[in-house]
Structures are given as C-alpha cells and as structure tokens.
Length: 148
Image 1: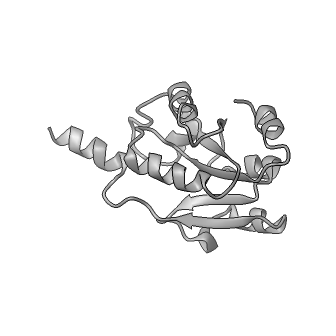
Image 2: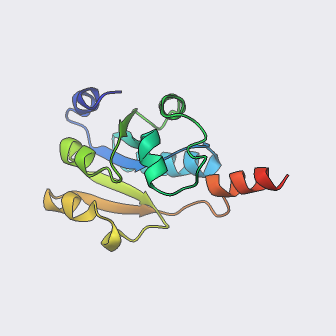
C-alpha cells in the first residue's frame, strides 16, 4: 500500500497506527495487532524497510524476510487495513502524513522516551501502550533456531 492509498482509506475513520519490523510473524505479533486494531476503525502498520532494519542493529542477518514478504503477510491479517514501508529509523514522517488518532506501541516502550510522542501529541493524537504476550519474540525464535 502506498502512503496516498493509506490516506485515502482513512477518510472519516478513527485511524490507529503502529510500526515495527514484523520479520518473523508470530502469535505475539498477531495478538498485538488485533489489540491495536480494536482501538479504532482501521489499523495501518508502518514497516521498516530492509535498510532501516539493518540500521536498527538487530543483527547482521536481519531482516530474515524481505520487505515485500513482510508487507504481504501483514496485509493478509484480518486486523490490518494496510501496511506502508518507511526507510527512516523512526516512522515520524509517516505519522506526520497520516496524523493517526492513536499511535500504538508494545509494552516494552516508554511513551516519554519515544521520538514519535511529541509529534503525535502536537496534533492531539493519543499514545497507547499495548501489553506484549510474554515469551513471544522474533529474536527468541531466531535464537532457538540457531541453537539447534
């Protein structure tokens, strides 16, 4: 989905936005996205581009799945209205363009430390932290596979 398509899709709807790598989709991701989607009328997911993921320091072999595959999988989920990629370290420019009513992050984030928070609050948006499902992470999955 393009940014313009995402903007057109949101007309008159309460937009929820979240972002991340979503490299190896697991039940923690699915539950998180379902909970995020429940906060509004439609959920748009910002997805780090491959080069952006490499810049996050997640490891030399990340992402495991290429951007196109990650977007396709996310857009196949019932809870996700669309997914838009971004090349920067943060989704601030996407947030400025979309102005979602709700910006969601997982329970491992502190809203006061997030660079997106001042941008969202400046236009009257809300930051919501959704608890994560314990023991579910892509890093854990990769570690377990490497140990075999």
